[in-house]
Image (cartoon, rainbow, N blue to C red; front, top):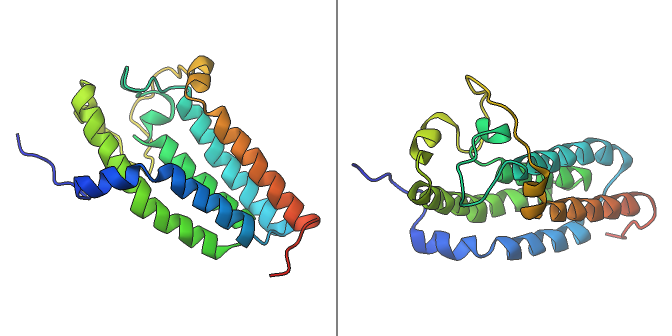
Amino acid sequence: MQSRRHWFPKPYADRVARLRVTAGFVMVAAFAIFSHPTAQSLEIGLPASLAGLALRAWAAGHLAKNQRLATSGPYAFTRNPLYLGTLLTALGLAAAGDSAGLAALFGVLFLAVYLPAIELEEQHLTAILPGYRAYAARVPLLLPRWPEGLGPDDFSFPLYRKNREYQALLGWLIGATWLVARAFWLPLPW
């Protein structure tokens, strides 16, 4: 069997995969400093970011990490709904903060940090989950596609809690509150 060509050298992918949390803190700091929300940017960006958060929540309720292959719910549309949700949430918050610079920063971080992490996860899941290769052949990596046949939606609130996705909700609430406060009560001079 021929080995698949990898996008990123493994040492690089291993190193940057550990930077996901650090990259998140960099984004939070940049977001807090460089966002300039307006009522209109909040109307556009907050619903978009909330849609990304909802996608993450939906995915977390279907994911039993390293135990079974997740193919239901959003995993029927994309192999990486958590990362897609992260992308939508961050871009929505950048739009809510009325900052093209924040959107560009997150785009660079997503390409440099998250795509290598996705590749490492693909390798890991191929090694530990029977049927992952066949699943990967029919379901797109990131951008969703409507599947031929949808199975029952077996969302599990206990899995949502076990995957600690409520932390993303808390982070979103803090970010949204900050944007609203910045837009209406705490404008910065720059």
